[in-house]
Length: 223
Image (cartoon, rainbow, N blue to C red):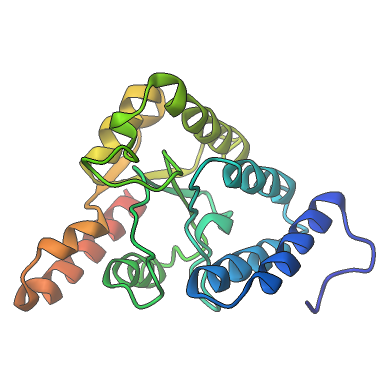
């Protein structure tokens, strides 16, 4: 943990304790993702939005079955991103989403190629779920969904205080849910395909799909 000053802020201390706890928990792929993400957060202690990011992380992790976009070493920052770009999905799937996952590589490699590796990546609903299952938000009562909407509202307010961030929605499902609860923000948001659509693309067509996705993301970032 080089570079951490001897006198930590309370927020930094909370994140550091989380790092140590995750390291003791084991070395599975998801644990490694969490550690890298927390360490990326600690690297940004001097950023004016650091404390807000810490508390958003802490609150998000209290949601049942929560999953947050991970950072990668020398790569995308995931949920820890603090650039004025918010990339917003609908709900994380039940997939473990390891570093080599085709969808992860599609999204993360495209973000790096577009110079947007520091974007803040998040989901509207942060509890994992699968369509057609009770874990999917469409099967929930309204009061179960509301904490997720409230948390995303805080993300928008606290990580984009000047209201000048680029908002990019991943797929039509994200656009529909986001528009319903954040109509003013949705008016300026851009939509790109969800990386999960890649699983329906025939193997011989995936190269062209990757290229198309990257071009659409680049257009959304620069429009």
